Length: 224
Image (cartoon, rainbow, N blue to C red; front, side):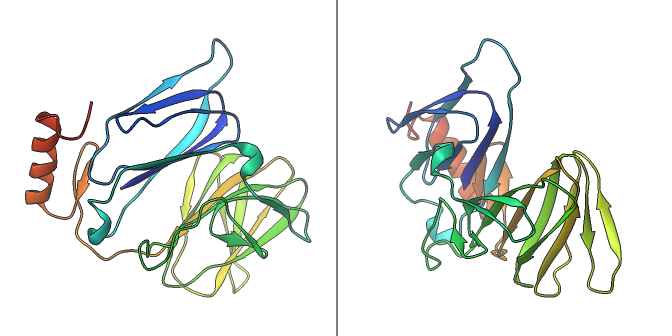
């Protein structure tokens, strides 16, 4: 699997058994592929103020489960941004929006989940439109303010602060409406339709693979 860590506020030091090391800061992203195994630490590096962020786990297809571990820091200035005609600022971590491609891109042949990861900043009473495939699963998470999901038939569904709204797999996209100060993440990806076996930080396809991964960790074969 992969971890995608988005730091809204704060500082965090990453170190791992492959020799990777970096400092994740305000607005930055850490994208790590565990692959066949990696030991890592994430330690706060600040003396005061809040630490705020998100970490999502992105499942890998079975043929990529044992790939070489990989790590990348993406600083805030490296994340592409676009302001929509309606005035919504979009930070594009992965995927694309309004003709702008995100900071992370992987070949679809190797990574069929095709993840979309957008951070939306509303500066007024505005709407935001994003095309989405009906074959993708998607959700929106509000971390400032509140927003509404607008349906094709005119109905609305409110998503409150610190709540997630899971979107229906229908139509050709999503339309969101919010007021000034609202911020939300829009996440989408193609489901793999593969079995999942998980135990703590280990994610495989079968129980047998999972037990082997735990044994490899206990034997020190994942690194130190």
